[in-house]
Length: 482
Image 1 (cartoon, rainbow, N blue to C red):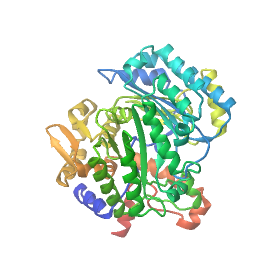
Image 2 (cartoon, helix red, strand yellow):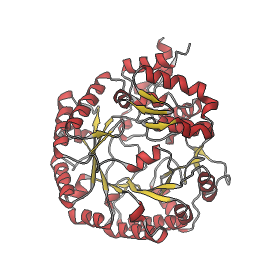
Image 3 (spheres, rainbow, N blue to C red):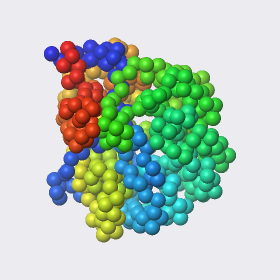
Image 4 (cartoon, one colour):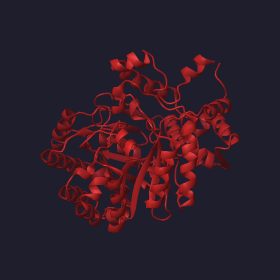
């Protein structure tokens, strides 16, 4: 017998359930091959344009290259330090930008994010080429884009400050620097050899000295061997270093992450990790940060992550580059497969040069799924009346009990038609978000990860043929235990 939303929330909070961080809906795991010829890029974006009274755009450019693979990473990355490949890839990416000129010009460009991978592996000449191409397509991008961001490693800042300063001079306003921990053995556990705590400290100091407006850093809760004491050590030191933005993530080991090679993975169900969340929140607020999201803290007026906030609010995102996802109000899609490979990078370069890239895999959004998308992502601050044109009222009988359960548990404020998370809601936001997933999305997500598990012989030996806790909140386990 299925329990009520009120009881489900209570159970999941009591058990310390930690679903994956909800940063997109539907997740990439739900993407499937699209009917050949059904969708063209121009068709997708023309249909999306009709859904926005004030057309705006987030631009995401994906650079897949890394010089090592972090253990927890399941992003679209390939290992390469070949500058000839970087040259060819940059040419292809710029061709793709030009091919989307009409899409970009039809909207106000709000943010630009160059992610990866490790885009900081590119040389200044590559960034000059990319920014010059954006300038060809959208000459006033510096005026309209409130955030121009790039992902970087600590060493790319600390060991090459001149190259990083060149990026700031080109218009960079924000750098995302993954650090994960300031404890040596935890840094090694993350697979970040060569990025020790001294390099991290130098990177933060260098970013401050060079005048970078927003330095974003992160810490991860739950590494093997991490203790409450070592967590407090990282939190305290990072707060003292004063980056403008800090994110704290629960460790998520997915079946497609490098850590999965051990044959052991599952989402955490550890109530004590929420105590680490509480400690970090208390320290960061005491140091003058404000909470922007469930994982993120910012210095008022300087920090934050504009592209993520705008995407959650429903502003579409155009993703270019191999492995990039585009989020629209009609179709979320990729122009390639979900699984990264050097062969696919080469195929992307070829197709971009020949103007042959089309949506090939994705998820078609019905009005109901579009409403769910906003509920999953945007309960931080959401006016439900915005969703009426997509049929919120037709499905209110399904959504309102979840929102009422969240209100009764102290997770949200109900302010007329507006919903806002409370401090407790920030803490348990991912549990609440999972409750808005459709059965279709849950089943596709499970199918994807169970297929990966079936192909991992070591995992089958260690975890059995039908593992639990590899997909969100695993309700089958709870029902089986009832």
